[in-house]
Image (cartoon, rainbow, N blue to C red; front, side, top):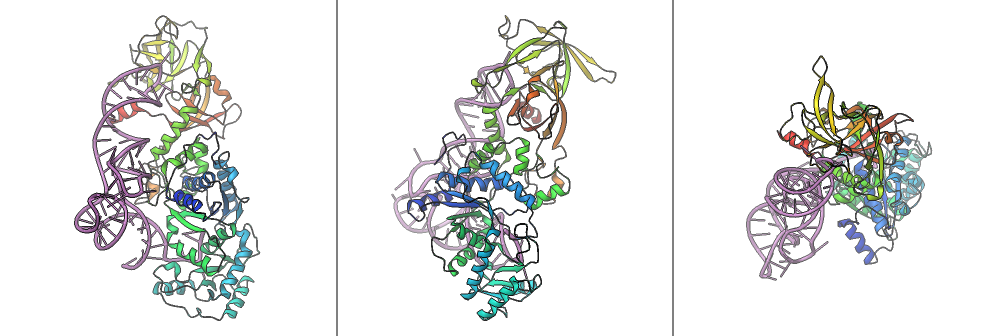
Length: 562
RNA sequence: UACCCCGUGGUGUAACGGUAACACAGCGCCCUUUGGAGGCGUUAUUCAUGGUUCGAAUCCAUGCGGGGUAGCCA
């Protein structure tokens, strides 16, 4: 069932896929149907990406389908803005990969409100549900005590009448509920007559004012699964204790088989970030980030804007596996996955983030050379391009040190360095302003050391990047770092106090001229610096780039050790 | 507190009663016109105790540790 030109790793094996494979083998199911059921009350994050890749991945690997279903049973918390973003993110993530395994057209639990209500009536008829008049506080207390309430044994006819009047909007919010009649002394709290419907005089984003009662998660989710013919209903660990209720609902309605079954796996936790919708919402509303799609956010929209690709996120989802152990994944795994893909696919470019000017004193003033530069050493088919060289250049200020630390093999007074694709130069003079800041370096080039030249084979320890001053184009470059300074910001204390004050730095970079036509679909490697993607803030003639991820920097690590 | 689930190197996973392996991270070396990439090497693991078995990470029991649930949220 796999598509041929898939560059993500081979399908993994895990306990859920083992079950699916066995169910197919044994003939329990002929065709697998999974689902992804987000509540539209926030933006999707990388944890949802794990779930999407699991559900669509299974559909894809086993020749089944996966439905997208908005779990929209609480009109108070849900908004169409979220629906739009969720649909966009899911499509972005599975497009070209598992889109053909999308089941029914993306829909809503609210599509089934009518059928759901009929099931509720049926439950009442069977004596498996009743209308309860207790207040929320009373309900809580009785449940805690394991005590049966006074309305539990209402006659079926009365329940039916009350339920119909609830539906008709005769009672105020919270006045009554429909509850499952299970077992008030059950050790599992979710079996102590859970609420199935509550009264909410609220307008719903899909159904408008058609309904005055709304089903609870357990009821709506379980029966929506059944209605859609879901075979494997995969959710996160916190729903584990709900599973007996899931099974009870299906059994009590006496539904014909095959019934769906619920399986649970551990949600994703990543170091140096937070993952709950509530906390992400706080970062946005407190202005600690610039919106849900801020490139520092672990949201799918943020990661996309940062420059991460759908295939990269999918590879990551496959790399981390699926278990029931509540683990903490090192964000370095994500970073590694992204680098691995970009190293294979990214065109190389020369750009200087923090420029310092150098003058090649023995190079003629008006002369310009077009030098050949390889586009991607990992991909010979990517070809090469020309970059202009002239007497005045910019190099990275970090690539010069007046008093170099040990093992520093970049440019230093009297020292030599190779300019990538160009000449070996020697720093002859350091020019400073009145304040003592280095403002210019005067260098001489070994004019025979260019590729193919007589001295081109000379062994020079350092090679640095550069751009021709006269030809450079400017770009706003946004340098992102981890959003939090500690590996587990929500371990203890206020997570917001650990926000990294240096998580965003904006510089004006000098770029080689070919970047003028930068392609938003591409990720560029700025040699020796990292991978960069065009930000949507870019306009014709105005380049804005985001640093998706740095290159591995062993020198920085060396410096840090001291 | 009650109930449920889970414990394999620093981290994430594999091994499905038969030699504990892979990736990330770390460390060292080699190579390099990216201190990138790549190559080679290396450190380090079955929560504890008992039991079953020729043989246990795997099965059982107890203990310990971690997580989840106890909304008219999902």
